[in-house]
Image 1 (cartoon, rainbow, N blue to C red):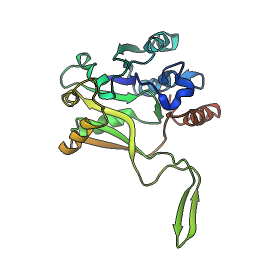
Image 2: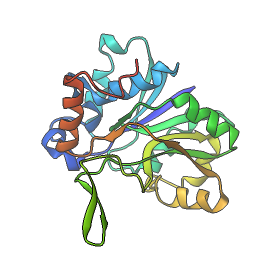
Image 3: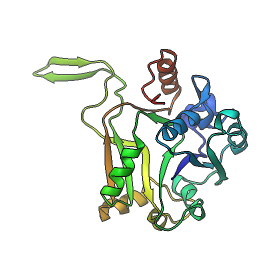
Image 4: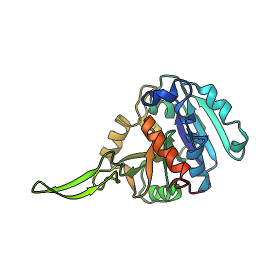
Length: 235
């Protein structure tokens, strides 16, 4: 089974790093976050990857030739510099067979996620798309207030209320029917249509997840790695 990883965006919110390298190559603990993501999948037996590249794609092409990638089957596909997320996926259609399922994620987030369980959930629920739902880390202290008195103060915990997309998906080949062209944003019209059809399911992940949108996020991940308490290091 294949895992598609989007690696083509500009990563503008992490411009301190992405001026010189694509976001998936920003390093955590001395290795690109792309490597960390692939290690998560590989731990569960997924060793075939399709990287949808764009911005500074040659750097990614060269990086995955390093010795520590040799155990994996990696195909880099240039999907355009300004192509949107759904458009990048659409350009990969020819690599898949009808009725084939595959994993799909972005090149900037890690989690201690059992991807095999997401696949089992996806099949059991007969979904076209399954999204991993996560509770985002709260940036500031979370307060519970009653009659103007603070009854609970929790510093930077996981949100206990809201669910967001963690960016780890399982998709069926049918997803290509919902992708129009290179300007299609995967997260917008395709998802809205699937919601209406009740074909988008959510696998709830209650444990660790962290994206790397900003320099602050990068520092959080690096600190966890340096302290040898990185929750996503499941291998």
